Length: 454
Image 1: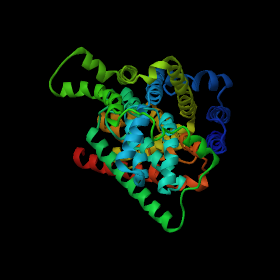
Image 2: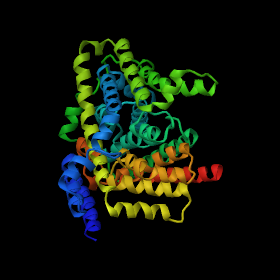
Image 3: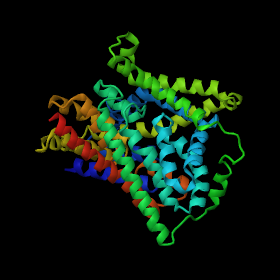
């Protein structure tokens, strides 16, 4: 009984500390200490065995995915240093106009993250530009933040096939699938998330305007606006700026397209069976292409590359810490009882996948952390029950992107901190576009999968 109480207390402590802005690594270490000691684990078992090592260990995860995080962050930083990321943002803004600022924010964030630019680089790219857009269109800050979250943290993260996101790679590596597994189901979910999310945000904008709510400047806005490209600043064209993203996605897609055409080659099999290495290679190729294509980045390439390496560390450590938290949790009797309860529920297997992946991601407040724990602890049981690996890949990915954005989510807290928002001001809109809408899209996909695949 005390072990079950300790598990609940540890989870509650993690949530409370995260909401209070405590560093996620410190919050995790304190939480696993509570869970471990109340479940009869020795101190050395907690911090030298279960937390760092094993299938869900922090160091195990960091070792397996360091290269992907590094190449993704490097590509994102070089895209920013070359002004290509700003070129994408300003190019779309000029074509659509500031009055479509919410759509612009969603499209730019989606395009950049789908191409492999890490979320934090995307946020820092969009905020300076967003100050001008919010001011010109009189958009409440909370809605602009929600548009960024919709574009950067939903369908490009878990739904769209081929994305080099960590979530897609975790599923592919664990199940032996490729990054395009369950592709048409992912496309359906992606369209639903984008359309429903934008419908909600546009509706909220109209309501806010009718109630006299609009943009309110802050001192930080002026500082961030100074970082935005000025109207007379020379930026690469949209067509040129988007080429590195096309290259990254093309390199990921070509092996599968060639295989579908009947072409057999050893490198194609390598690309399809090594998603971490091939996605990393695609991102690194995009970085080199940026260097060759955009002269501005060559002047400070070494410094920018070093900043990219630094950019990789914090997301990697935070994600690994959450996964290490799961590595301790899955050793407890309470978790084993919880997992057995989930598997024994009288539900169709795909519905059970949806429920279990969502709950684990909600507990950890991390789609990648929850997905890694799900893959190491529950996925084998679903495979044995007859769920096809391709379906398990896509549906688990979609489900992990549902409850991951609860108030204690590190990404949510980081976005609010950057934009000067509180949970009271802005979380409702974030909840709708990053929790409710993805849950609805995932349920539709589950229904379609059951209809067409039984």
